[in-house]
Length: 231
Ligand SMILES: N[C@@H](CCC(=O)N[C@@H](CS)C(=O)NCC(=O)O)C(=O)O
Image 1: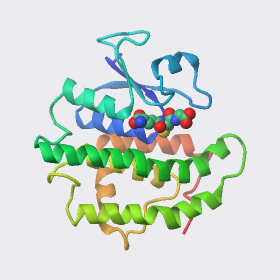
Image 2: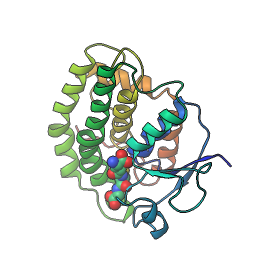
Image 3: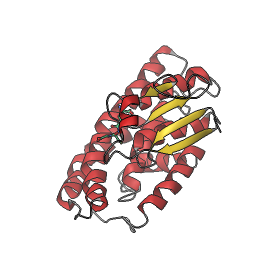
């Protein structure tokens, strides 16, 4: 049994972000699936915002709230302090601030589009035996996502990483959200956003993302057997 337990679902881009950080730091962890449809009471007690993921560090507390941290950003900050090497946050103050901003941009703007606009519109109804809301998914993919991808392309500006010339929480957070598109629709148009798609493809080689994508494929095998064409 590992000291760390991640409660969540591989389908959550926020749990995925944490898995990527755990993978980079080579930390061993147990993954405990928690459904949000509906969320069990024991878990709601650990997550006052009623969100996944939550991390438990069993070396601090094995039961109840002691030893738990909700929220992917809080969890990643905790992991950086707990296992500082390799660092996933830049050392310089400015780059640190930029990386935190990219994390926030991914967790808010990108998560809203990929999560609400695509994943929830397509996959959630299917889990409930209903039809996907393809109108919402198409409008998101064709109209709402392109300006966000343009912004990411400009920010990368031909570089391999978003901030400071090396892998950071910025790259991990953005890739965790692009993966949310990838598992349902595939990657965006590479001819239009070559930097973003190339960056994502390199990120899929990180152990935390490789294993997360494999877990997502298993869960989605009967729900979205093929990636949707929304173009
Ligand atoms: N700021 C939170 C956001 C987490 C979040 O929104 N998780 C979603 C799943 S991807 C959730 O738990 N939603 C619960 C619900 O919709 O009831 C984090 O970074 O962990």
